Image (cartoon, rainbow, N blue to C red; front, side):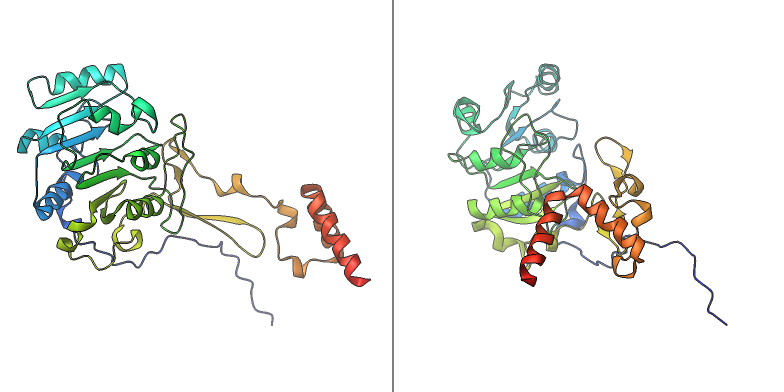
Length: 312
């Protein structure tokens, strides 16, 4: 008797067996931050030791919402340069800190060239060259803005990365302030190393870096994104099976647009050709070749020409 065919649907889930527990993860806590940055920043500054109690953040929004500097200003008496380009948010930022004389609020766009460079903007303030903390959060051009900073050298840098990009991908968006894509943590860690900084922690959306001279205080054996990024909940993995079907595992929604990612809408191979080509019938093979020709006529005709030349 022939064995019964198993018709159960395939199953694909993100089956992480990671026991990754970065050294600073236990310090994650929020006052106004999104993903535990307030607690980690406090611990990082404690380990750095040297402090002048100055910080910089942009875009600062209203100075409180998702802020990574509010706790330092409110609780530790930090002086700050807070930069926001949106006029409405800037007015709210001024109101948030109007009774704090140590806070300088600026309505500016931070860019990578000329008077928009952070170096040029900070030059008009009393902030020291090696201030304690720089927070970069502009939803896109973050990588290039940090790359353009030359005159100032903060001890600690908190910078947003695109949390949907896996650690294995080194992705840098175009150097264009009108583009909102974000760069991968791996790309930002590479830039940091070039600038003399090391990764000490990664929350769900931010990488925290310290100057090389302070790194030994953290006792971190593996400062790579793979060694310090525990939260991969925003990542979507795509893979393909022998039959040409595309599968998704992990995050199943477009994070910022909040719509589902549907594998059925991402299929490239038509249903009639979903199968293992080596097992196709002669008729199905002809259909497959014709479909290939319609998709990539130059590539297919080029392969045929090379085969004919090889046969002599």
